Image (cartoon, rainbow, N blue to C red; front, side, top):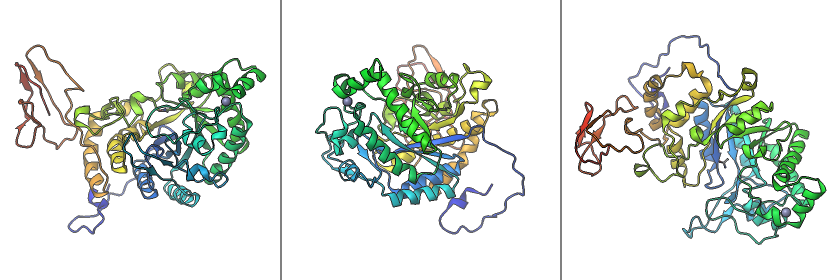
Length: 454
Ligand code: ACM
Ligand code: ZN
């Protein structure tokens, strides 16, 4: 209700700081209104994590999913296992750049962030990945792997075949110790254990894993993963926590009480809700903020995919396949921010803004009441706020061309900027347009052979 200048750091003269006296009647549609951040691939300092929490609060999100461990870096101090950060938080280089990279949070820093978040009504859901995405951990403690190593903390992106050994009791002892320390730091009821992208190659050849499969009559490696997650689920439950995992935890049988984060589409979420499990919807199609926001040619390097603002806004977290009773299991949705191609936090800001605002309406507002044109109008005033708050963000490119469009007959192209006050410039000679180029005022007639750049 206050003018955007309220966000400025310096004193502002000449503005009337009056707000109307109102009663606000509003409530969010979902209880899980999430944003995620991967600090494994690229580390985010405490100061940035607080700035990110401020942003979540401003836009009425209530859950921060903090992805703390990865193949490429273990980012949280564990007192009982100091090598996790001494060794596991550092990598030799990143994608061949020959520059060492590292970073982690001390437990004191974690406590400070948890307190900061609580004061702003944000619950943090920590994620400690298992059994896959664990290369940094088994580099520090190779005895927790199937082969015994040696390993190196990941220096490239992707999925690694070396994972925790599921046949070794030491793995479970280690994980319970780690979880105990992490549980002590995060008061929220949900605890994320990853569970995605765990290759089974090592387990197939490992005598310990095979012995476990035989002894427990599991039959195959997928059910070994299910056994793994079920043991961890029992442990978390005994500590009063509810396990959350990526949708791969459905493979081989879902642990009782587990909540599923559906990312490879919505099928996993649908299956889980039908089986009376709670679900958070984060399908790549609508929720992966590491995907391109615009035509890749004009965007900073991203992981791939295409997720423009209007697609985020269009998301409906409750699949049609569910009955109204089953739909109650959809706790909400969340934007995921994987940082392989976000080497610094300025790039995180760019990828999150403005898409976070669209996700906020997804989790607050019934689909029938959402209106993209209206959203775009309301969004406009937030760009100034981003500037005043020193957030990097993306100015959306004009709508009307899609990612790529081939035209074979004379046609008219209608363009529109999602930012109402923005001007659109274009040119026909293949060079990048500037403000000296032709300003768009009416549909462009194309009757010749052109490459159109906007
Ligand atoms: C994921 O994106 N691997 C959960
Ligand atoms: Zn093994």
